[in-house]
Image 1 (spheres, rainbow, N blue to C red):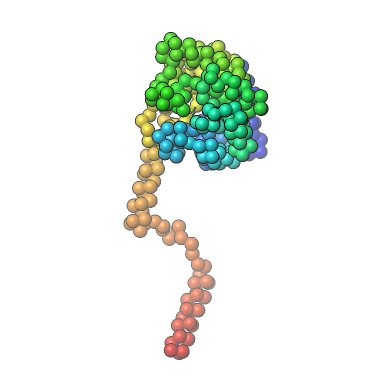
Image 2: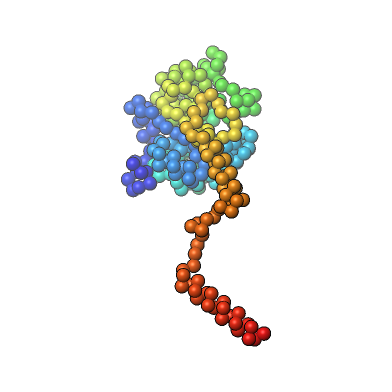
Length: 297
Ligand code: KIV
């Protein structure tokens, strides 16, 4: 099936909820630009997340904290132009939902109206329940995100697997329930033990989408640059590389450099040409002009 042909069966929020009832797995990848989103969409991935991981994997920041709403919107719009079938979700970046409900609503509405998102993601459990409810009341579908939430890197003291003590596991279970009760349609579980993810998945009616949370979640999400082997940070335990694009790109760039330096690129076949008749006309014209110059001189 080519989702860019006319007959695309659009993935919607109700369809994602239905997947859980049917026991069918859900696939999700991040994308931040037109070509990647187009290929992800054409591959039949169910959900595309314009994640705030944009900050690190594309913009070169050292955490997700600095990325702005404007930067997210810029990339979201490119992904929107490429996405026909997948459900398009955007992470609300740090700072857009921490100041007040009005500001969160305004940022989310911009994501839908200006960026073409169909849902937003916010990090946090119980403490975000009122906010999630408010967004849902404003017809904005929300995907929750708990566990190793990268925007909390400073409070966690680093990127550490969460839910490894009884107390923190119980907290996360309560967080998951609060997100569901507030009306979220799905929940990302990031960086938690498999056992806890399985327990949460079993208890919730909404689907869980795991990243570093084991195979028992209802779906899986990966950062597309990790999956492609195009990341400069050490590979996390849960990441499976399906390609080594960094090696492919390094090789291509080095061959281009060598070909140009050696005069092998471009070849004659890679050049534009005159027609034989134009060449003849041009040569005659030049010859006539130089004869005239000689006589005039
Ligand atoms: O920002 C991101 O890419 C994410 C996921 C991978 C869940 O939040």
